[in-house]
Length: 177
Image (cartoon, rainbow, N blue to C red; front, top):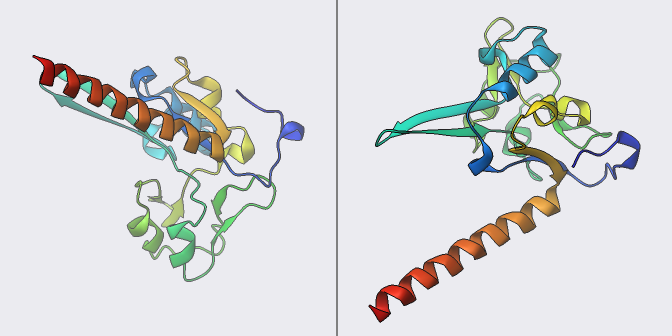
């Protein structure tokens, strides 16, 4: 569900939620991001990544998106305070004028979502396209949604609970046999 800017409570954090089973690994999210930010379709210049790997003949795709952490490690370690929370969108953003390219943020990001622009030598990361993420807008399968962070937490808890129940059922079935 996309919200119009005037409908959002910007004091609440929003983040991009990923529904992995829906992701086909098409890379449109990477292209949308690089086109919006860099004015060219180049996945290497995207602020999001789709990691693809093969295991036993099956190709897996995992989109890697900034989680807009409430207490962002990247923001905490930045020696020049170049990484801050945007007052309007509440996204964690990099002020490239203040960034010195030390790569501390790159090193501490638990999701690997910060990259270093090779030309500028400065950190770049998802800023949710100023609150209207193009990756979400153009994802053809609906694998990406832009939701309130509390909804992501509830969804993750439900997913963990569902897996727990599924494992209990498997365990109880194997004990009966």
